[in-house]
Length: 105
Image (cartoon, rainbow, N blue to C red; front, side, top):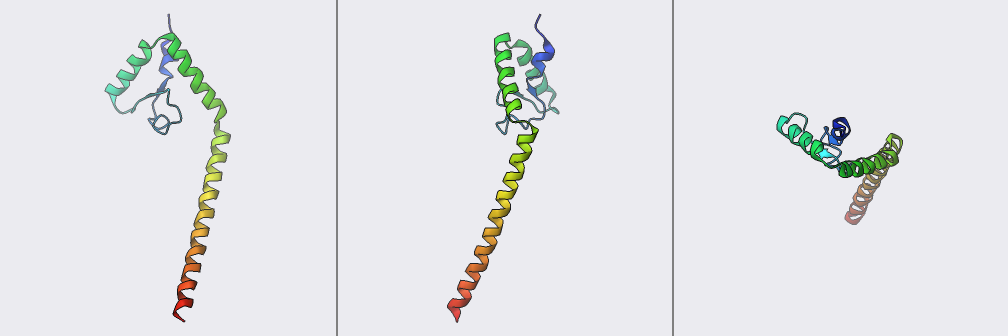
């Protein structure tokens, strides 16, 4: 007999990871939508063992590769890049202001 618990783990109850493309193999569920939860559970329980294994293998691989440390590092790198870009925009704004002021003189 197949494990219902193993199949239920395919459900993305947060509705966030799948939409962002992080875990495309997950079944997307809004946890506040009872009908959607029921449909996802039915789909998970009706899924073939081969499909279940393939989905879980793929998701485990992604989670192993993109763990919390890598995610945090990416967030910090992105934040630093945005901060750097904002500083450049600010400097360009100052430069454009000075250039316009010099043109008036």
